[in-house]
Image (tube, rainbow, N blue to C red):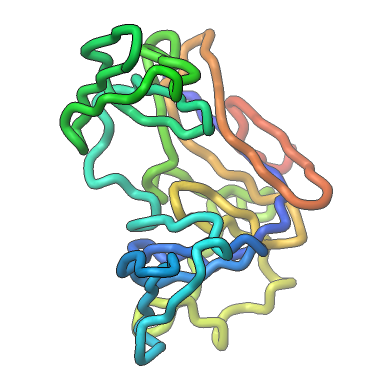
Length: 234
């Protein structure tokens, strides 16, 4: 049985997502798309954009995140097994050795990694506790939007010849419900209005565990629905 999971909330965090660009998230909440070109002495992050002639440098203490490839992995993880470090970081990998001083992980991205045991807070060989039905969001097309005013689906975004959003010919914001924006393996709600839900079809069994990360500013209105289409009742 295909079960539809619908999630809707309000979060006052706006961005305009790009599908393949890298992404800078600043400590003050600003975001900037472009191409990450490395770290130089300072330390400073070197950033390149097509609309800027020369590369731009940013002090790393001004940055919160540098998201590569929009947060998309080159290939999916074969396992969710991971080590959680005392500083909050998580390192995916399969435990191959353990002694009094270190953990040894086998990884697909860095070969064999040895981590000092005093830096490990937790090891999770099977964090989902059973069969994993969904892990993401790593692809935008796995989800769709639904609004009670458009039970057959949200109208398409108006785009120009370059395939970018055409703000000039688009309908005024008041004529259409707000839309979610996807970037960095996460969904963001940039609008002040509410009512648009995110839906994902998943083969969830009768009993399952649902985990997700949620962050917001100001007030939050949040709901999770199962077997819901958000259509107006007749």
